[in-house]
Image (cartoon, rainbow, N blue to C red):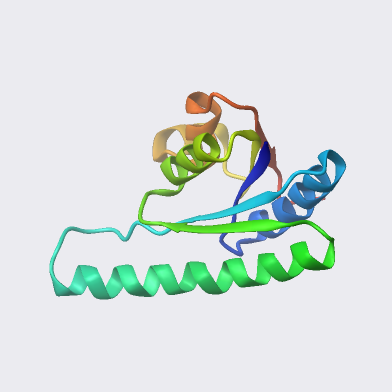
Length: 138
């Protein structure tokens, strides 16, 4: 089994990383760090350039998370996927037999999250494994 974390260096994700490291360490399971890198838009050269930039942003963000995991003694796997974040997390959770998915929240209201389709909101409704949604504020 594993713990899957959606990570993008947002304030919510930074706090979620700390919680995911605690959960991984407590269960002695690896942490799967996931970045959904689907670029908005369609096709063409602009799309490919944007997609490459989004993927690079994800790689850099995940490098910081890997360093934090190494410092905590937690083994990691890194995935930068060309999918929207919720789908990337669901797919990674299935591939890695996840115990749970950990995500941070931005403090959006439940109505705003439902209307705009926030990643935590989607996961809470679609995930077959438990979702741990970590608030930004401590």
